[in-house]
Length: 380
Image (cartoon, rainbow, N blue to C red):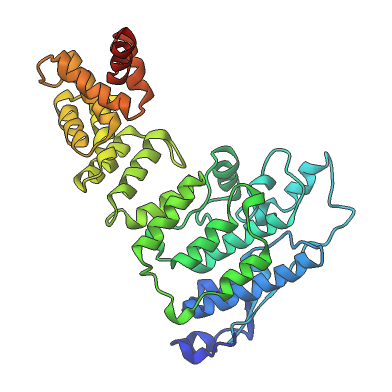
């Protein structure tokens, strides 16, 4: 894909640039100023990596300093490939091999390569590095910008953090999706570079927009959630939380359970309340539960809890039936103690298949209607 410099208002900047420059420099100077050019560069790099992998080799040092971009055609070429040598393994072996490229690669290295005993370098390691390159191209930001290599190592290897695209980055969904797939923590789940080439080439630049249909983004986030890729799913849910109350519920769950983010009940409650305002029954129940339990420093408020449970019961949420039933059984939240109402609600939760409601009913010796009818039939 050849792209003319006339595509953008680049003449002043291009006059002062050499005929070619590394990708990091062109990103800093903002000369790759359209998605057409960004995708063209990404396709060139992906094609070269795919050919390299087809030959059985790996690049091992993929980063934006090792990609040369021709000006003004915006064609890209890989350089700086790591060539094996007798100095690869030094000192205590694997550690020496790792430290040799620590400074320049810690921002791009696959998670399996920054462990105390890094795994052997494989094609998926290059794929992960390409994903970080996509991040850099999409956001025009240096990966882990403002952090030293040691700080990046601590964030990634010790704290399990990874880069993510946020709603503020305004990356079109096809680009965000390629970044997400390439940077899966499980190397076996990453696509091959040939598959990445096909994904990039399938993008219709003319139709590309950051205003991707919210339904598409939400459905992709739910898919990632089912695959337990919570970090990536969280960023997509954030993009559509204004449109889909259940996206706010998911964000609340991630904060409450510590999935892809540090557990924080107070932040979870904010998301649950927002989702509840949008009519999400599960969020109503969870907001009520946090108010009921006073979890993680949130001030207890049983009256608020009961109100949330009542609204969630109206939405048919089994957990809310159980929770409200317990409140009636205990006389909590301003409710008069009412065993009959408690039993009615809890048995509804039992019939809906809620195990904790069944255990509660069993402790009190409550039988389900079907059990009672069975006993009556056997006696007759």
